[in-house]
Amino acid sequence: MKKVLLTSIILVSALFSNSVDVVKTVATFDERPANLTISKEGRIFVSMHPLINPTIKLIELSAMGSKNVYPNKEYSLGNNSIIGATIAVKVDSKGNLWVLDLGKKQFIIWDTMKNKLKNIIKIPSNVLTKASFLQDFVLDEKRNRVIIADMTQGDLKSKPEPAFVVVNIKTGLSKRFAQGHKSMMPDFDGGFALNPIAIDPEFNWIYYGAIHGKKIYRIPANSFDSEKNVIKNIKEYAPKSYSDGIAVDKNQNVYITDIEKQAIGVSNKNTYKIIAKLPENQTWPDGLVVANDGYIYATVNQLDKTAALNNKKEEGVSPYLIVKTKLED
Image 1: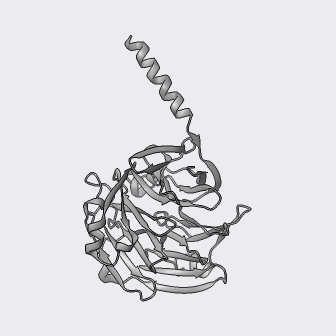
Image 2: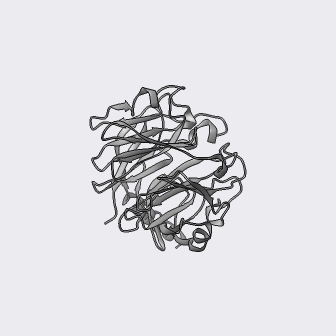
Image 3: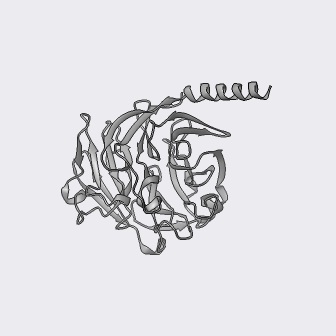
């Protein structure tokens, strides 16, 4: 009887695993991509991960698959490029590309329509810590501000002191909110803190969590006027896996890069499920973006196999990927 029951469980598990689609590969890379962003016209911009000390910091991926230094060599090529190091990049509704330069602690805003520099916003040192790691951010275009997820742990080993860094786009005034709040902390010692962060398309809700946390939290976007309002309005929203990136669609579905199951998942309210798995031997889905074509796109970069996160052994094997899968109905 036990043998029959075990066989049944195995068969059900196999059927379930086979029912999940494999993501579609959009582009391949010889070096690790970090995050990506897609303009409303469909232009794809990709940052190259600073953990590998890349020669090129930022590229535009053409429709033909070519990878072009973006915006130009002065900004993105070589050790003396204007962009020091970047992971997080976003295109706003007006076609401006926002590059969070974690190396030089600033935003570089580039007008992709006119192909020229729009602005540079410096992030003051008084809202940062010695271990600040400005990993990701959201643009609240409705209120003219940026909310950065400062994971800290910039040396990848120090005690986490995560916080939101809120920057006024018009004035540059910056504030640090909710440092060390329990919702930002990892589930275990040595884990990584606040990192994935997203805003819904209507700019109503900010969603976030820790890399090594099993919960998504959300805050009304209009709460970021004061620390008191931020902390008062933090609410648990949904379960998740350990994840590096999240993105939100118009239906408040929160998409997850599942670094435990090597998959793309989706959370909504009380549920979490996997909707697509990575190709065989691929690991660490990283950045996510919801596009206008009915798909969600992700970078896949085997970050867990870098020397920095793998006992000083580099075991990544190219190609590294950009992939896509259909959005939830």
